[in-house]
Length: 188
Image (tube, rainbow, N blue to C red; front, side, top):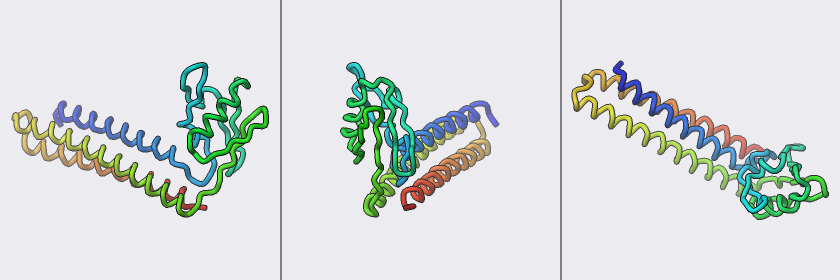
């Protein structure tokens, strides 16, 4: 296949991979019923005048399926981290024992589970749209090459088939990750 076509496919694949990675990150922020350090990944702490991710000021660990512990490296920051977790609107009420913060993760209600599944579906649709837009841009490049007579009609047809297969693969990966997340959320 033409070198330019290979570059178009490689570029499309890289962009699709980034979209899939972004989708995976978004899914990890959606809480399932079990305690996970990723539940706090978006929490930012006021640390010496600047907003800092909690992962840069503390260790977040899982004690058991319903409990997180937050061990702050600088004990003077314990109350600041506690405040940041409360203000993050995650529904958590950390208990400060003077050394660490203990967070009991409340079980999800059926209604809340359905809301989270809906959010996961919304994120999946955004990812699918992103993948289709990448396909659309790559398709336009291939069609322009054909129109400029840089490649033959047969080469363009093969390149478009390869592009569609790539798109289908990434849509399938998104659907698989969504299904797994949906099962995690709905499992009590």
